[in-house]
Length: 488
Image (cartoon, rainbow, N blue to C red):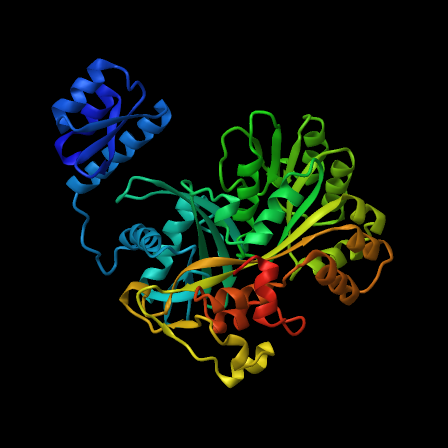
């Protein structure tokens, strides 16, 4: 489609082809009723065209990307020279994006520098940089990141805005320089500006948990919704899925994040900057004065942010935030240990959603798997528990770089605070007692139990479940878990 027109032609006519449905070309433009636009489109692509409407910003951005990709095609890239640090620096981000990596690690060793990518949460070897190139590669990356090139004794941070020469898309990369005994180690966190916003239905909660999360959590008028888990467990994606659901013309949503990772139209987002005094302490009181309906805090870090979230919830606001704990009950205990009064926790906290990300089995090389005695012993189940299930494992193929996995899925533990759980918190009971009451009264399933359900349905492996999910106590049999999760 794009071969028949030029970026200049698209810009002059304010339209661009965006796809094909059977033998018909789909055209995006700002004014589909304009007869001149229709005539121009038919001249270029024939009579069989579908004219669709798009806002002017989207059309302009797409034409700009088209123009950049056309320029990149005309300028053939130079072959990678052995001692050309510039080529190494330009090539690494492109290869990381193609591999779907979230982080690029450049690690100095005794005689060379090792490069590894983190793909689907796992470190994978990529290449090696010769010792004589290390200084110039790190130096160039420091210049791009705005770091001090002469400082090699202290840790530094920076940011690189990289333009992909293949697609023309801008990619934001956060840089962290860390001083080691063999030189400076660099980690680049790859943050795409064009992130697909998932709906709550797409997160991967079980049918019953999804229904409960909508009706008993997101649709409540006020209170705190906690999303918890370790770094890299997908908390930010879940947080923005909730924002996406709540975002409407009738609501005022305001955020304080460090930093803003996804830009959402229609909400007021603040990126914290400690260097100029824009921190939680100055921002949280200002947020409440902005007359918001929904307050989003990037993270609860200390007593001040925890108390501010509780005060906002007490005054009738809905508060969404993240927390770093192992599971749902752990969040309650940590709030108690932060000297937050139990009556404040029970009166303001609506729900805690704990989560992890597990690697999905590659569709191209999956094969049936029989659980080993070691796996069964570690999860406390028997072979009979996995009768009539679809346990699989990945053999490894070119499509998945011989790892057996491709992509990731979310595993969740949803605790909705009902009256019995709130009463247990008020009585300051043990974590075991709160967990027992949650099981009995709210039909909660643990992270391990949800992981086992996903493994039994062939989405992930028992190895991933054992490797990533906390085992607080023996899971219930799958036949009991399926009705609780709404799975037939």
